[in-house]
Amino acid sequence: MSACCASSSRVGTTRECARWSGRPGGGCDAFFAREGRLPPVGGPATTGLVQSAQSTSAGEIAAPRSSDHSRGPVADALLASGFSRSSTELEAHPQPGPLGDALSRSRSRPLQHACPPMGKPLGLGSRGRRSRWEVSAVSEGVLVVATAGAGGDLQPLVAAALALRERGHETVFVGDASVARSLDPLGVETETLASELDLGPRLVGAVREAMTSTGGDLAAAGPIVRARMTAWAKEVARPVAEVVRRRAPAVIVTSLFGVEVVAAAAPSYPWAVVNSTFYVGPNPPRPIKQDFGPRAMPLIEGYASLLESTNLVLHATDRVFDLSFAGLPDHHHYVGPLGIWEPPSEVPPYVTEPGDPWALVTISSQLGDDLPLAEAALEALADRRLRVVATVGPERDPDELRSVPPNARVERTLSHAAVLEHAALLVSHAGHGSVMKALWYGRPMALVPWGRDQPGVAARAAALGVARSVPREDASPKTISDAVDAVLDDQNMLQQAQHHATRLRATDPSQAAAALLETLL
Image (cartoon, rainbow, N blue to C red; front, side, top):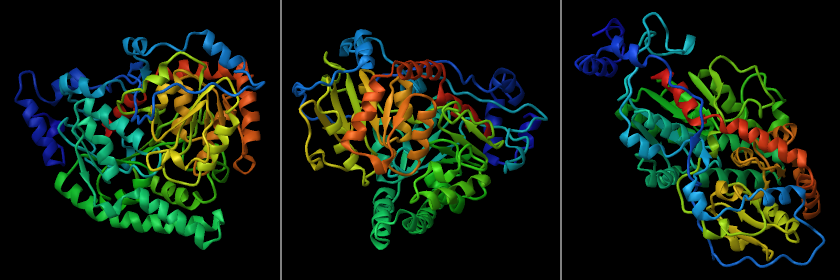
């Protein structure tokens, strides 16, 4: 056994290296010589068009009502480029994606093992809680503490976790029932928490209580929501601590909504946070009060303060999108838009049928108060030579919408990637995942930031030259229609979006995240 194994403070690590040492050409030094550098993080990946899809009738969309509205030069340019390919062509030529088919590759790919060079720390700096010269072992587990009730937090975690599994690391999730439902089709093991700990209902209830007790005052509601989420985190920390005790993982990974849970449940373990949006931390590029809605401010400030106790923070966004910020703390890293990952699903046939370009309308997948945005957007798009599809989230009934124009469809969930491949633009609440997905596909946007991090997301998209933003307080069918006109008439905006799509597609965010997480193993 090599010196690096002998110095390990973790019995499991030493055992694993001993097993490797017994193999031909084995031992830590041999394996480091063979695989002692971080795997490459660049290069394109491919994936099919994916995400949970629940379609309604696949019949024809009615023709738009007579109007003076045209598609606009942007939509006409996209139509002329032949974007509306058949479903057969799409299956034959899968579209680039951030992860690719990690599951099928992970079953056939050999396990990897890497030991650190003698005299070189693991990249944890003064934050490392493990032995300074400790070796990583492939069989050491990664425990992901996840929630699916906070909007776009789950997708970046899943993208990073599947990339780790592809690279040979055992990865187990602990989360609420919605996490288990999302991961079960992927064959990912999940330890499910009691139903009363589900984040979604607790967060919705906290927001409703806060808004009722404050008469709808967003700023006054913030501390109440923060207190309720802290109480929830303490409850969840108890069963998570039991899972940690049984599993003894090498590292724990979570999202912003899990930081209080992990800090309480496993303070002595190395842990990492995958932040699903732009940089959150000390000295941001814009004042935090400009980037977050007033109701979210106390919660975000509390979570941000805990990031200093982590070993690693991965921001699932693009540095150029994040105002080209160059002031990240040493243990923070940009890894690219992990949140564009979508689970495999069938694309409804109507998406790829020939016709006018699509306009994709999105509101939060978390149950909230943004349904009026979907209604206003549908009205703004009603008299255009566009086909429209809106997604309202898994917890809403499409029938809740007061009216749906003849050129539109409404789904609970649908692959946004599949629609964006054939779309002229995105009309959205400015969720980070939706915006980055539109950017990945080179589509310009009309955005109405509704709350949480959405003001900051919309501001960054506008600064990049790929979006027109409408303040929430000004949102109406007329102002959204004006924003859509501006987007569809702006060829430069389309060119900017396509430029950044080309740049982003040359990266592989999930592999970049996995490589950084491996520095903790």
